[in-house]
Image 1 (spheres, helix red, strand yellow):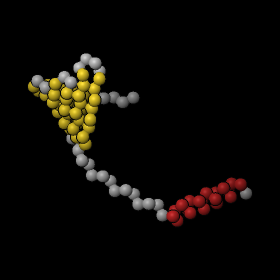
Image 2 (cartoon, helix red, strand yellow):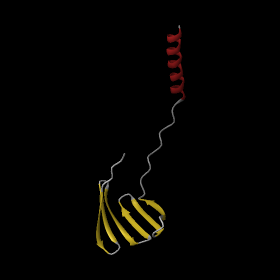
Image 3 (cartoon, helix red, strand yellow):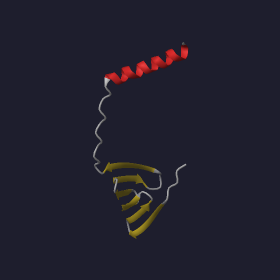
Image 4 (tube, one colour):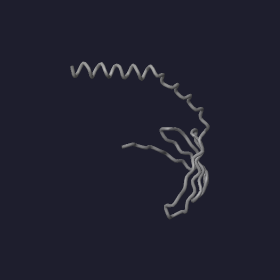
Length: 93
């Protein structure tokens, strides 16, 4: 079970500062439409007040993608198969 701690401070009508263990963010908007700005990116949320129906879209903060790992060479597969065969031979002989 995850524990979340968050404090929201109203600065002005429609403007809030949100403080949590993961950082600080700012929320701008009114009932039914909110824009949240944080270090991770921007989240836009729209909904119909009082119904529980809403939609949210996240726009990330353009992270640098990690370089993909090089492919495993064929000899590594052969070596693994030889080790497995040797262990099986030792167990069953």
